[in-house]
Structure formats: C-alpha cells, structure tokens
Length: 234
Ligand SMILES: [Mg+2]
Image 1 (cartoon, protein in one colour):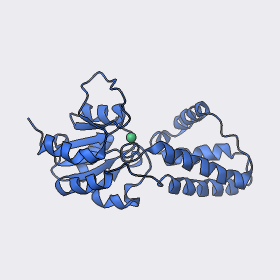
Image 2 (cartoon, helix red, strand yellow):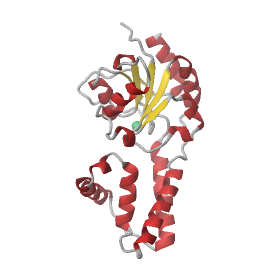
Image 3 (cartoon, helix red, strand yellow):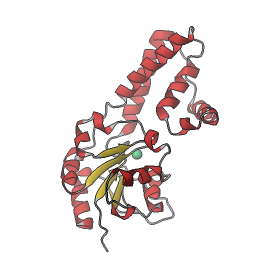
Image 4 (cartoon, rainbow, N blue to C red):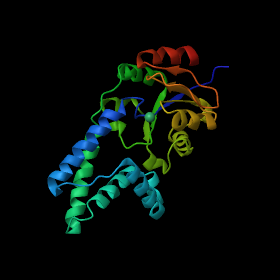
C-alpha cells in the first residue's frame, strides 16, 4: 500500500550540498583570522576536540545540541591566554560570525533547486538538521515551510525530537504522512525508521548499506528525485 505522504523533510549537510569543503574552508579561514588577531594558536587534534567536548557537556548539557555554543566555548579555551577577558570574548564573538558566514558558502548539488521547486508544489517541505546552517539564508529557503535544527529540537537526530517537532509545525500531519530524506544511515534513516516514518536515502558516494534493518530506496542524483517520489507516492 502506498503511503499518504503529505510532507517531505530534508537533512541539509551532505544531502543538499557537499559539506566537507565548506566546513573545512570555514574552519581554516576562521582560524587564520583569529591568528591574525592573537598570534599562533595551538588548535590541537580532533581527539583533543572530542575530549574537550565531553568535558564541556558534563558541565553544560546544552553543549550537546547547541553546536554554536560548543564552537564558541572551544574558541574560548583555545584563547584562554588572551587578556583582558573582554578582549578574548570579543575575538570569539567576531570569529564565530566569520565562521557562520563562511559555513553558508555552499554549492548545491546539481538538480536540488529544480527538484525542490517541483516538490514544493505537491508537498509541504521542511528541514531537519543537526547542523547550524540556516536554510532561510539561501534562495531555496522559499520552498520550505519550516526548519528545525538541533538548537530548536534540543536534541540531535537520530533521536525523535526533530520528528516530534516537525508534526507540530503543520496541521493534520502524522508520522505516516512524512517522507524523510537524508544521507546519514543512522541520523536520518534509522531515526525515521524508528518512528515508522518513510525515508529515502541520498547515497551519491556509492556507500554500502550496513544497517540491520531493510535499506529504503536510495537515489544518487537530485535530478531523479521528483520522478522517484511521484512513482512511489502518487
Ligand atoms: Mg547529513
């Protein structure tokens, strides 16, 4: 039986655009800007970052889902030697502004805009993201009715908070009326699967499915998405 899909929710990072080049550049440019203000900074390894993150979460649970706060706290720790403290905090605020601006310098995958335009005519579209990109900063924001980030959900996918919040945003929508689309096998597909939500897996890198539940239909090009959806759900 074909489900009565009325709403499509989308992940952002690595689903609408390739996130690695954007985040890497945003990170490097921000660090360079900071070092222009302060001199060399020891940024540490990724393992150091994870360890610091754990410590911060122990003191402040909101750091787990407020990734903007996390980033600022990390900057503060890295610039702990800067005096006076007010100066350090000003540098941190400015650095974050630079980061978040550059974090929005993305290139959409081919076909995204056309697909969203088509789909928005027949479905309510929403965003469910663990990241801090704001869809409404882009031209394609006009196709979306709502966007829920981890900051708003106070939790991260695959937990259910994003999905619970999504059905509050639109009248007469239940989980069985949602199709969720994302690249991440756990955060997106497992998260949806747990709630009986239909999903499509965006797999543009030819990744192998390694979950213990049945793989949903997948697509590798946005150009094929409207047709795939209309075949499955019309
Ligand atoms: Mg993603």
